[in-house]
Image 1 (cartoon, rainbow, N blue to C red):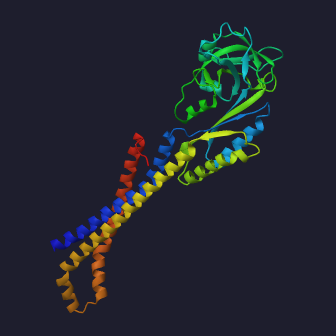
Image 2: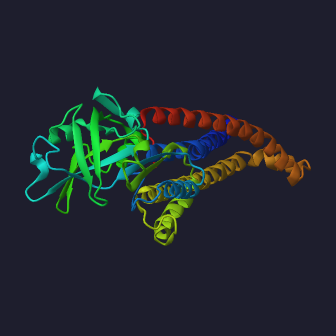
Length: 380
C-alpha cells in the first residue's frame, strides 16, 4: 500500500512540475518578452529620423507639413516628438564686421555664419548671459543669440552688432547679439533633439573650403522679412517604449519604403532623410522571433518529458494493482469499471497538482520578471 501511494505521489509531482514550468513559460512569453522588447528599444541608439532640405527662398511650411504627415503614417500611430528648424542662406562677413578674423577658420577657408529658428530650443539650452532674441521690429537689427563656443571663436559678446551679407541674394543683414547660450546635456531619446542643429556644439564646422559658425538663433518672425529661407531641418523621435511586437516589422517596412519613395515625391523630393530606425526594429523583431521559438521548443520538450514520465508512472501503477485488478475481474468487474476506479484516484490528484503548479508557475514568472525589469536586465 505504501508503494501505491509513492506512485501516486510521483504522478502528482510530475504534474505539478510540468504545470508550473508550462505556466511560467506562458507568462514569460506573454509578459516578459514584450517588456524585453520595450527595454531594448528604449536603450537603442540612433532611433530618430533626421531630415534636411535646401530651398531657394521657398515656403518651408508645406514641406514641413508633408514630412510630418509622412512620418506619422509610417509610424502607424506610434507617438513621436517632432522638432523643426528654419535656416537662412549662408551669411558672409562684411569687412570690419568682426574685431579679428577667427583663428580657427583655417588657411584658405571662407568664414560664414548661419541664422536659424529652432523649435523648443530655449527649454533645451542654458542661457549664460543676456536674453533670448525677440521678434524683429522696424529697421532695428535682427536680435540673435549665439552659442558661447561660437561667440568665443568669433570674438564677440552680448551687445555686439554684426553686419553680414546674404551670399545668395547679396543683401545686407545686421544682427545684434542679445544672449549667449550652451546646449543642455540631454539623455536618452531626448538627446536626439540636437540632431536638429546643423552646426555642432563646438560652434563651427568646415566643409568644401568654408568654415560655418553659429548658429545665430533668431525669432521665427525674422524669416520672410530680414532673412531669406535657405533650408530646413527636422527631427522626429518616436516613443520607443510605445512600440508593440506587432509594430516592429510593419513600421520597419514603412520607413524603408518611405526612404525609397521620397526622391519621387512632389512634396518631399528634395528632402534628405537619414535614420537607423528600420535596422533597429528589424533586429528587435528577429530577436523576438528567436526568443519565442526557443520558448515554444522548450514547452514542447517539457510536454514530451511530462508525457513520458506520466506513462512510466501509469505503468508502475498498473503493475502495483495487478493483484487487485485480477481479484476484481474475478468477481465480475468490467474493464470500464476498473478504468473508472483507477481514474478516480489519479485524475483528482493530478488536477489539484496541475492547478497548484500553474499558480506557482505564474507567481514565480511574475516575481522573476519584476526583478529583471527593476534591474533593467531583461532583453531579447
